[in-house]
Image 1 (tube, helix red, strand yellow):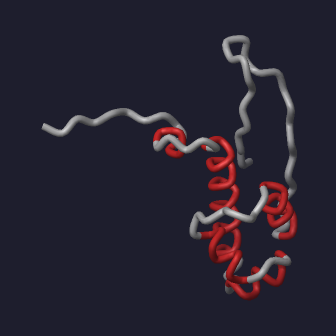
Image 2: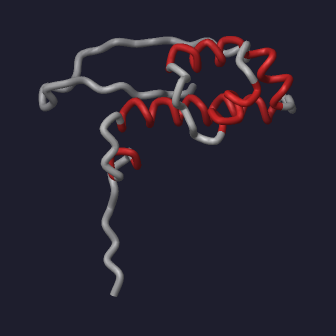
Length: 106
């Protein structure tokens, strides 16, 4: 019989990646960037020009390869795609020693 183990809300943490939180944030940002590009029916070349990044780098980002692309650059991509980005800083819950980073889309 196959055992199934319930994972957390972060697949990168479940797989043991050291920078799991950062990877999840980047994955969510890249997913949204890809959704907007598809909705606007842009080619990767058109989108890369609009975003100010080389097309191969955009292609890698959309395939989940984030090395060399900062969260800041991804946020800039969202603003270039006509999205407002708000960063909210608030206290962590008392049960946690450290805070966390999350991405919420409105």
